[in-house]
Length: 45
Image 1 (cartoon, rainbow, N blue to C red):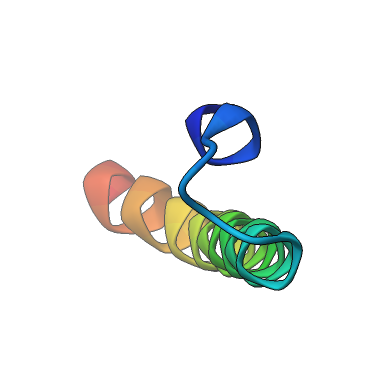
Image 2: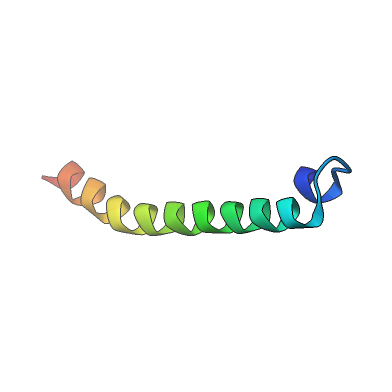
């Protein structure tokens, strides 16, 4: 939200920042989905 409302960034920079944030959150979700079951399994043993 800060990046979108910032007046210092140009349109292209805003788009790049939004894409970066989307990809980072997407990868974080995938890592969480992959690692959470592993941690739960190791905790039970």
